[in-house]
Length: 346
Ligand code: SAH
Figure 1: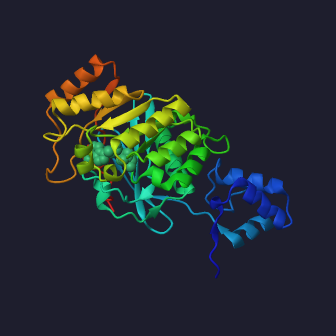
Figure 2: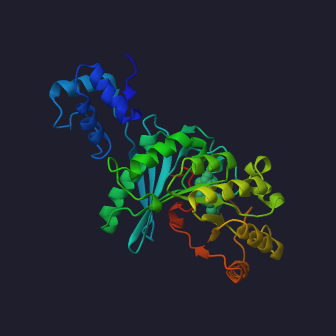
Figure 3: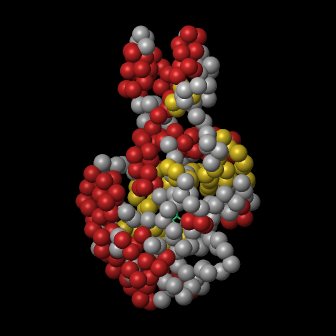
């Protein structure tokens, strides 16, 4: 049997062309497209305003690959972690993080990761493949449903902070975001979406050239090359100077302030020189800092810094008029917090 193609790999134009090539009207393409994305159809059979013959024809040519929530775990703080099974049985994880009136979807962009950040659990998994646009989109849809069910309101925010490096899966992530913001998909505002990256300068410039309307977060963790390179090998090939240059470019094109994500570790980046370096770095491009709690992933190679060190960071940043937020971790009891996604449940 010939391999059938995933119908959601087709753009709307391609789908319209398919119908024309098969003696039907282009308009039929629009209808089916709406079923596939906006209405989230899992089968051709459910497309009730499409004739039986057309559905049969579609069935002969295509499949609708769909993610499956294989396992769901709920934290005592309301955070929900999903083990997502893909059509080829690989697993990724997604997280729903509720807070009073908001709920945030944390989604994966790759199966595993290739960047080897030493403090991150996902780094222990080999990068297997990129996720397709529909696999990213479906994670958002399923979390939107969970938010409605458990929180009584739709999803409000999306962060690309799950497994993988989104800028190494650029085209698919962009297609997924286009569909998330499109009225033909979920119609969400791009201002509610944040893409988080280790900081790949070329791709950050690409985002700027593409004039994206969503937010950018960079996992900084140190503003000293020597220290950052030890934790994030990517810094050896793209150092802080090169990163800064790309961030300035981003700001010049988008006028959007960058968020730096930053964990303070005991004995690694908790000294005055680390704080001074961060302050100087932040002064050079419009930015703010999210200090995130460290989520332990092993037997103590890394330890969260003393609260005093965090306080010192906050004080110095604020004294220099740099916005800083201290982020509590969520979903730790189910290994759903930042950097803990490693398919332990599978
Ligand atoms: N590759 C992207 C997105 C995935 S990681 C990136 O690096 O930004 C999402 C965030 O979790 C990043 O800021 C990352 O540095 C952080 N992170 C990874 N491991 C962590 C851990 N053990 N504790 C706290 N944050 C962690």
